[in-house]
Structure formats: structure tokens, C-alpha cells
Length: 193
Length: 200
Image 1 (cartoon, one colour):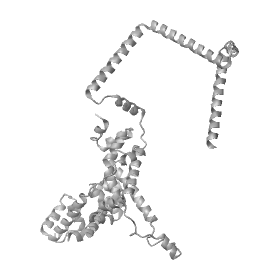
Image 2 (image 1 turned 180 degrees about the vertical axis):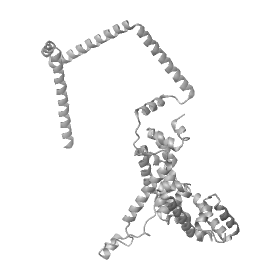
Image 3 (image 1 turned 60 degrees about the vertical axis):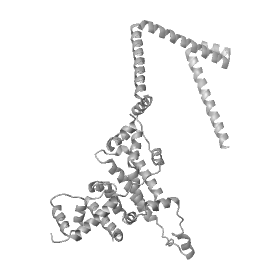
Image 4 (image 1 turned 90 degrees about the vertical axis):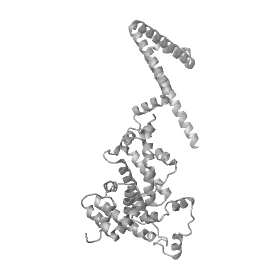
């Protein structure tokens, strides 16, 4: 090569390109002091650029970013995270927790199997419980009606049958909702003043 | 093992996939990995620490809020730098339009109006933040980088500070490969010219 290197040829050497094309360029640099100085000067610059540091940020930076990021957490991920939060970090406690869970699951399984074999007894107990809850509810409701509207209203209600009871219940709920709404309007008006 | 510890060993694409799945820790990991490179690039572009912080924050917010748009066949960092560069270039363009002459508004009709709209650069007091900036960006090479055109600056910083290949820079900046090579060549040339007096 009987000429000096072109700027793009200097760049090729600088970028460490390899191939047949670069061999004569390297050969030329070995013999030409001017091109060697040019390449060396470019290498010094690249070295300086490569040593430029990354600047540090205040520690609050990532928190401020996360405050503005809307993380959509699907329900299964939220559930998995919640479960993971309850799993102990230490191996010993984790083993104890798994033993406890396994014991509880075994007890539940045995109880379920027992109930399946005694289905008639289970149904009898459930029916008895439902009847008692219903009787307690009716007694509480009748007491409430007597307290609020008196004995006469309670007798009229019990003689009107299920439709009458439902109608009275509906009227009571609507009255309560209207009263709450009116109170909110009054409070909002007072705040504005 | 906590999730955050496992994340540090995963490649970007996997962490981004976890972020897409709603993992808060994955979002934090992406910020941790790239906050310094992104901030450094922007800071060297705008040379104002507070503004660079705001632009870096906007970059991460934009990227993380649209993580579902990330395509794993591309490098996550290229996508991130692309958004950082776009926001910065947009800001620099806008600032150039909004720039007011220090000699006063060209629309000033009288000498008094001209006086009122001008400002004295030397009278500007140096705040602690300015001091930090002049310490961080005060080196001869930083000064020389600041004098480059923004396009050259982005290319040379991505090439030599972030160690990106020409192809990655072309993809990041949406430029043809030949243009990237030209910009980097010109940037190197201008930097060598600017720093020549220091070597002689």
C-alpha cells in the first residue's frame, strides 16, 4: 500500500474488525509512522471514552419510579405471593410448617371420609342446625318488629303471611335507605356552608 | 430463596416476562439494572442533573407501564435506550425552540424592554447542584462530548460508554447502519480535534 490510511480504514482497525481486508491495513501501520500515530491517537481517545463512569442516582429514584408505575397483578400471582409470604424463610421452620399443614390436611381428609360413611347422621345434624337457626331468626325478627312498631303491628304482620312479611321488610329497607340519603344531603349541605 | 435474589441471575428478557406477569420485584430489578446507564446517557446529553433525573424517571415509567409491548426478540436494553434517547432528543428539540436570547427578546420594542428580557449569565449564583454538575461533567473529555451534535453524542456514548455494537445502535436510534458509522466516525474526529491540544 503506497498511500496513507483513509479515516474509515483507521476506524476499521480501531473497531478491531478482522478479515482479509484488514491485513494490508495492519501491514501498512507497521511501516508508516504517520498512520501509526493517527491510530494510536484514536486508540487513546477510545480508551478515555471507555473509562467514563456511570453516574450515581439518589436512592429515592427507584421508589419514585415505582410510585408512578401501574403494576397489574393477576389474581393467581397475588394469591401465590400471599401464600409465599406465609412460608417461613428458615429451612427448619419451613419443615415444621409443612408438617403442620400435612397433619391438618390428613385430619380434614379423615373427617370427610367419616362423614361420607355416616351420611344419614350428617344430614340429620345439618337439618337440626338449619331448623334452629331459622327459629332463632324468626324470634329475633318478631322481637324487632314488636320493639319498633308495637304488638298490634306484629300480630297484623304474622296474620298477613309471607307476602305481607316480605312487603313490610321491603318498605322498612326503603325507608332506611331514604333516611340515610336525606342525612347525607343534609351533612353535605352543612359542610358546603 | 426470595424472588429478588433469584431475579439477579436471570437475563433481561426473563425478568421482563416476569414484570409482564405482574411481579413487582421484577420491575424493581429492571430499574436497578439500568438506572445508572440510562441516567448517565441522559445526563451527558442534557448536562443538567435534575432534568436528567426527571427524564430518566419518565423513561422508566414509560417503559414499565408499557412492558406488555416489549417484544422479547429484541434486547430489552435497546428498547429502553431507544425510549430514553427519544425523550431526550424531543426535550432538546423543544428547548431549542424555547430558547431566549441572552441579549433580550427579539420582539422587544424599546431598550427598556430589551433590558427586562435579557439576563446576565455571569450573575447566576452557583447552587450546590451546579457544583456537583461542574465536578461531574467538568473534565476535558466531557466538555468535548457536550460540544458534539446530539445525534453524534448519542452514538458515541452508546458505542464507547455502553459498549453497544453498531447494529444495536442503529436499532436503538432508528438510523441506518451506514449513518451510525458516519456519526461515530465524525464524533471521534471532532473529539480528537477538540482534545488535540491536551496531547500535544
